[in-house]
Image (cartoon, rainbow, N blue to C red; front, top):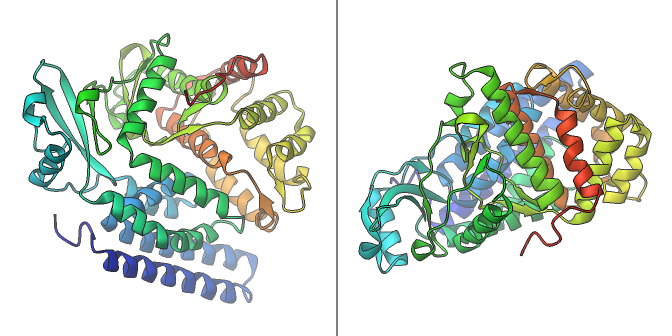
Length: 447
């Protein structure tokens, strides 16, 4: 891999990220000064132009850097549908397949971690089947005949990420300021913690095994088993389970009724994780899923998993119950109980919460069945609402635990829209809301 493809020098990464932070910051300052003299229409157009310009800067730089830089960029890009289409298109480039590291380098890394490499593997494909921000995946066959995939971290990626974190905060605080004036601290702390967890493949293996136990009686969800004897902190080996890739599954090649079954399975997987297991697979990138006949899903990549505190899970259930039952006036108080309020502790006004709630009430309507993706304007209206309430957002406070819950729910909203899944989502939601209301949530999802 060329040096331009993976910047490994600590000094070069420091100066690259620092320079990016400086350019984004200067652009924001100049934009705010210029906006003072603009009317509303011109200000909105200029804001989108600034968003696109800075999103392009960030995507181009982080796409070359991999490590924590690219990974956090990918996390933010999953919110791209809440931004103007031009900006979303730029940030989505960070989800593209990353260029692979040479096979001999990755095999060297794997052999260094697995001292019994030749005893374990009958064959090892040098060409990767997937390459991402922290590591890449190779197909292999064990001596006992099992087909597996082997996820291997890039050389020195642990040190690279930890060094990146010293500079990434400034970059992403500036990028976050393009969208809102809300407090960046809980978002940063949550992203930082999830990112560091992803470096420990033994931890991911524990999560996979926990998720397999939790879904043992859910045949619609297929989670590949961990091969412990070929797993370390930096190498993760799993049984190979393949299915229909997302782009193909979302195409017109498959019957709409199958799309609906896949959508229902995905919807239930998310709501079961939030309200029953309180353990969310918190990376909603659709490439982490494959599709099987009869509406089943294969779930990959458990590096980013979120344990949801019981009060937070109950808070989401209360918000959804109130929205479904038309008690919108109670939602500001419920949000305040969850810790979502103004800096002085006062609840958000109904004028702020009601427009957002009304956008989603239609999804949870009793009839007729709702088709995700049938309203292409919903994201535009969400963005417009965000601009309208930007002044309120400057004083908004929220617990860090909601960051990845919102990311997961929002990301899968987009995935269901890609599937154009149709269903009675209200009935499904009420099943899982009732489970937590009746005390059926997992007592300790971390065990």
